[in-house]
Length: 134
Length: 228
Image (cartoon, rainbow over all chains, first blue to last red; front, top):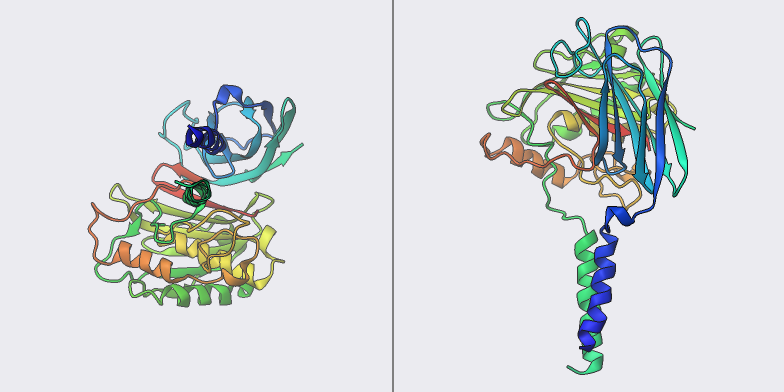
């Protein structure tokens, strides 16, 4: 019984360190917007991933400015954006008419409990980009 | 079991569990998803140099380093170094192009892209060094990033993606201090042997690229080396 009394809390602590129930985790909110006008015939993408590169969410913006609001567990993330050239009108989905990756940019962001953090994908006229965390 | 022995056993088991959770297996594969150049015998690739003179020595050293593998015998050949060529860093047919340019405040210091076939064969590759972050970096960091990006183009991933843990002595290890991470290590050469030695395509070493930002756009796969 003594052994159980000792091992149960230790096991719980070790397993808890590996991640508890998502519903129990404190969260914050990340807002991502766009500054600048995307060059014509470019499809833009946005991904939020953990700092160990586990994707959390990914969206395509073939014909619209980048915009995302996402509740996230407290922690460190990276906001990543990239674009691909379109041979004609950018497809709403799928790869048809899309070229290879052209530009990619990203920046780390920290989400804290109960707060909003915002990041902006800054798109230059030549299609280069950077991510600014406000 | 006596209490003292029980306590000692508990400590040992707990320590073993913690080590099990945190240790990096030294013998783990770090193939980039099994990608490799199709070849007969060792790979003899042309590496097109679209780098300016302040990068040419780093490329030369990286190529010599990688050629210590029995499975790589590559040659650096001068190519266009115009701003346009370096900025675009176009895929060459059946070869690798290495470029440097002030690519901007993108957040990445290096970018490796490969074009692959359905059989995981690499048909062309590029490696970009971002002078926005690297132009004023120390020589060790420049050498390490060059070595790493070229290594990606051979189908190698990272041995480790934690910037702050102790260096593994290889350029395929993320670090904030490149002093001892400028060149490949034995594990890299062993990995190349696994990928280019006695393998067949159905059983080539494979590892997902967990831990590394990977972007797939059609048949082009890109690994991002973040600046920090």
